[in-house]
Length: 214
Image (cartoon, rainbow, N blue to C red; front, side, top):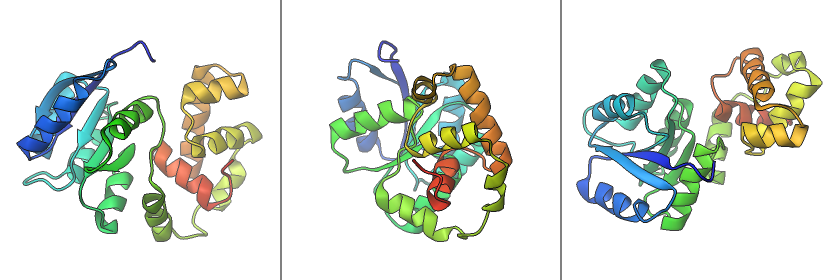
């Protein structure tokens, strides 16, 4: 993936924020800003139109906010990875955003190099959670919920789940287990189906919660 340009869409209602993000990201050799949007509804439309690899999405915006935009993108089965970039740290905004399908979460005061690293990370298939964010999600989960479903996983699926919890992409899992990426994708799909989960973020958190992490 290192040789491929990561196409990024900026979604934020503050023009100065978008300008700052664009100014920094445009000096990255492997990142291209393909467009901007000023609210969630426009963000969804532009994501469908431009098909970016990664969307940098604010949460609090007038009209359609980032959480609703995430839900709409999931309904549309848009493959773009969404990285939440926000100044709001309250649990009530963190948890819904990740449950709505965000691949990661960083704050607007993040170091520029760290932001570029976060974009590369979610593009590669990693689940990017800061410790306090993972804690907020786990705190809302019922410790016993879903425990029984774990017994339906095969030994190989447990291995894959542990690597998902470790933040590994499908390519990295394939290399670690000497499997094809297609086989890993099948295992991931089976894991999500058996555990009644909708995405890798939930799978990673389930693994941590139920002791299946590596």
